[in-house]
Length: 394
Image 1 (cartoon, rainbow, N blue to C red):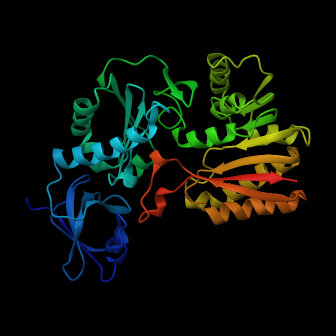
Image 2 (cartoon, rainbow, N blue to C red; image 1 turned 90 degrees about the vertical axis):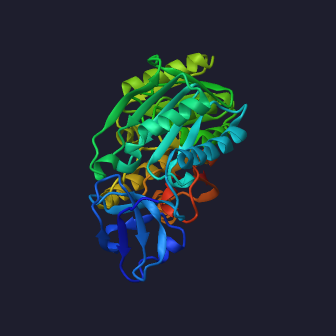
Image 3 (tube, rainbow, N blue to C red; image 1 turned 120 degrees about the horizontal axis):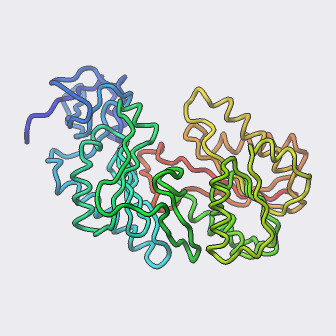
């Protein structure tokens, strides 16, 4: 083993790490022995000298160390190949024959903090959010080429987390042929065209796949409102479930145009379809009460930082108040929050407040979260970000 910088923790601050948490916060560190630059590997020790693990260091980040292993081992090509192959083979066995679009590697959930890899057919999208993983792009690309034979590997390292790591956005072709403008995928029999270069996240909301399929189960004969619809994936599944009429709201004209194309692609353009461009809050306020059988609310994160929490709660309260007003008796609301700083309890409480103010009786039928390819470690609860409820409004 080569000599690595040593991170020495303050007394007692090793306890979360010994229980499996992968992050060392800067406030838990007493000193660093050795020179460190962002992305270096380093060893972590307790105040008493107990070895904790090895991880990527970044002295400019609040999360100073992200642990990769609890053993004294070399973090070379074999190490990362084993981790990546293990993660991907699990997904392949789960999704075979169901979809050709899923997350192959999910950061801390697969014990590879800072690394996300998404599959869209034979196109792979790589996202590195930490300085350590950013250094390894070449090695990771090599592993993906050798073991998965992709046509194209594209980088979408443009997540806000990079700024916190002192990194600039990075986007472009890493391997293979230049992409078409849109990459076609299939999801439980539905077809979509993904904009990998400019679309949300890495091009598509893969984390809502199972929730879209779930919606399909109870849409037959229903009038649907899809708030924050993006390119209409929830609505396509609702239509495939037998919905009789659909209204989509989004602030992006391009997203609504793509949604219309998705209805045509799936031979569903015969259905009554209304596309409304505008701010969802204003549009919802202007719609007629008791007009819909099912409403889907899947907004972008309202609270990306803790300082935005109060404003986010006001936003969630308002959209749910409007949804309760717009639903017919016995209507269903499928609603989500992807804000990291809003947990299950807080999300349920703000919905409860909206229900009280609406004067409607509301039953909670189901909780819905993120799918298996977006798995997270029990020892890293921060990896759970997607919270959803299916509600019945009387």
